[in-house]
Amino acid sequence: MIKSLKIKIVLSLSLLILMLMAAGVMSILDFRKIGNSVDTVLKNNYQSIESAKKMLDAVEREDSGILLWLIGNKDSGIETVLGSDSIIRKAIVDIEENITETNEAQYVRAIMDEYEQYYSSVMTILESGHNAEESKLIYYSRTDSLFLKTKEAINRLMVLNQDQMYRQAGIVKEQSRRAMMPATVSIAAAIIFALLLYFFIGTYFIRPVRQLINSIKEYYPEKGRLSTGIVSKDEFKELEEEINQLIYRLRRTKNSI
Image 1 (cartoon, helix red, strand yellow):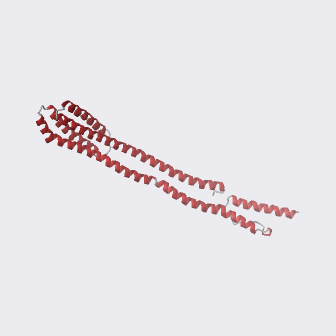
Image 2 (image 1 turned 90 degrees about the vertical axis):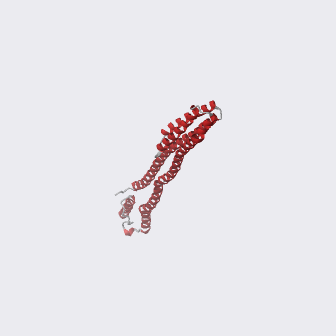
Image 3 (image 1 turned 180 degrees about the horizontal axis):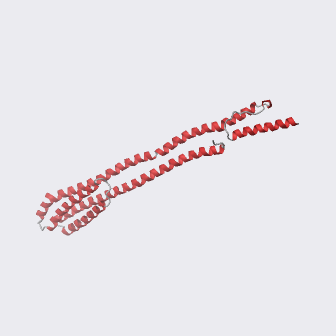
């Protein structure tokens, strides 16, 4: 049994401090974990969306290039087509290196399949040697529809990553709420502990002091020993014993005179 008031106080306060520190450390670790995971996911999704936007812009420029070629601006048209093709293929490689979502690889393969068909149709026009009317017929009967299918495939990939970003925002919100739980529990526990500490102080500090005060007020020499009713073995009980020793010495001194 602990007899020192100092140790009792230190232990009681140490428990409160440990509870708050544990809750703080748990909250910090949870928020750090959330931050790292969110940063990685959002970064990957953002890069995939940006790559998809580059492909959309490039495939539209490529389509503009073939239209320039059809109206007679052949050099500018070919240059535009080849430059756009280079951008699209590089963007596809970037996306393949950044696949994070379920079935995202299938979306990328769909883009590659649709684009290869579209690009093949474009090159058929550029390299076949057909006259202008025949080239326009090929474009409007096949190439244009393949262009739209390619854009749709790219848009599906973009929507996939955008939806994941929205879902991730909801997950972050939920995880943040969960990360706050240790702190909330700690606060509740601190309140309960404060009430217990108040009871402890009242029991082990205030009550013994009041008992000493009341006993001293009611003490008369003929009663002999001072009795406070303190049952603990701490400093208050020691103080009671010292007071009784003082009374004994005073009475002995008085009797020896």
